[in-house]
Structure formats: C-alpha cells, structure tokens
Image (cartoon, rainbow, N blue to C red; front, side):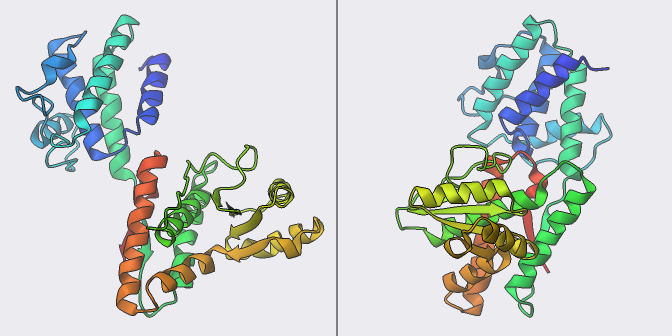
Amino acid sequence: MMNQELERRLLAYSLEHKLNNKGALSVMLHVTRVARNEGLPLDANSLLTGEEGQVRGLSGPIVQAILGEYNVTKKLSSEGGRTSRGSLAKMQRYVRFLNQLYEDDLADLPLIEQWWVNQVMDFFASKPFILRYDVSRTLYSIIRDLLEQALTRQKSNPGTTYIGTVLQHLVGAKLELAFAGKNIEILHHGASVADAPTARSGDFLIKRTAIHVTTHPTLALMEKCKENLATGLKPIIVTIHNQVKTAEVLTEAEAIFDRVEILPAEQFLAANVYELSGFDEIERDATVEQLIRVYNGLIDQYETDPSLHINIGK
C-alpha cells in the first residue's frame, strides 16, 4: 500500500506540471523504469542522447512493454514523446523530483510506477465530449446538446463543474476567434478560479466590458455586476438558456436589470459562428472546427482533465 505522503506528492507533482497527456505520461513511465533498473539518485545528464536532443531509450515500444507488464494493451503513443521538445525538460524535472523523494526516504519505485500506470489507465478511460455537428440542425441546438452532455456527466460526478468549465472555455475560444488579429489580449484562467470571490472584474475583460460566464447566476454575481457599473464597466452575463430567467429576476431585484446584458450562452456562441463564417455553409463548418480546436488548446493549457476535450462527430 502506498505511503500517503508519497501519494500526495505524486498527485501534487502531476497536477502542477499538467502530466495528463500521452507524451508526458510516457516520459514518467520510462524514467521511473530507468530509476528502477539503475537506482537512485539519478543523473539527468545520463538520460540524454549523445546529441542531447532526446531522452535516452524513450520510445513507443519501450513504453508499451512497460504497460504490457500490467496487462495494459491499449497503445499510449507511437513515439512515447521521444520527439517532443518538452520531453527533455519533463525528464529533468522528474529526475529532480525522484531524487528528492529518495532523500526523503519515500522513493518506493515499484509503487511509483504502478501509480503512473494507473494515471495512464485513467487517461484511456477519459472520454471527450462529442459535438454532434449536423448541418440540418441549428447551431443553437447543437451547442445546447453539448452542454447537456457536460451537465449529465456532472450529475454523475458530484462535486465536479463540467458544464461550467466547458462553457467558460467555449466562450474563451469564441473571444479568441472574434478578436484574432485585432491586438486585443484575452486573459484566460482555470475554470475553478471563479471571478466572484476575487479581485477580477469578470471572467473576461474586453476594453470596458466585463463578461461573466456562469451556469448559475447568484447574488454574489449581482454584487460583482454592481461593482462593474460603479467603476464604469459594462457587465454582460452569459449563462445557459434555462438560467436566463434567474439572471433576469436577480437583476430586477437589484435594480440593475436595464444596465446588465443577459445572453443565452447557446445564442452567444452560435451567433458568433455565423458572423465569423460570413453566413457561408462551408466557412461555417471550418469555423466550428476552428472553435473546437482553440477550445481544446485552452483545456490543455488551463485544465488538468483531458476528458474535457471536445471531438466533432455526427
């Protein structure tokens, strides 16, 4: 059984460095196996190739052989992250981490390897959301279906915020596309960092407009909107269709109904896709693909759960 402190450190390390993709997991498995074979402490320089451009011995077949010992047959990566420019940095950081565990008498390498194998299995088990793109349907209904998937998954996993996370980064991706080439920086953040209890004016600040993305409008959000108004900002609330009425009731109760824009998220996103594509069907398909590509990039950068990715299907 794994020491609780060791498990805590592994989890913290994995989250801090976002080790949730094929290449990163391959590096972790390979270096852990090298440590088992050669012992700790390790010298990171000894894991460099002669040209110092790749991690010594790292390859897809090597990683698959390790996984095969645990009866994991699904293919993790054809190259095992060998050609990734970030693999060397990941290897060097991880060697330092293992060496510190060794100094702290926590480096149980068989258990550490098992822990990484479990992360790989979790990675395989994580299924992306599917944007069921059908040109015969409205974009509004397609986006609504996507958000319903996130809500269904959230209900199955109490304590999670899937729908809020998906919505925030979809809006973020939409803003990136809308302002591409216009010298306007869009600041993003992890969805778990809400703007209400922080000093931020909103989830996104575009010039003098504060955009609040929410699946559940609250009195705390109303206070944030009033702060926006007091400082000369224009607040916009973007929320799911069945929460628009809640937002309207709250803004009326706070006497700011006629000063706060309230937009259904599905309409907010769909309208922008039509505008960006010039209402051309072929261009609309390409715009949808671009939106999802940017969204997935934001997930990779700001979140730790790969199951938040979206695939386009029929």
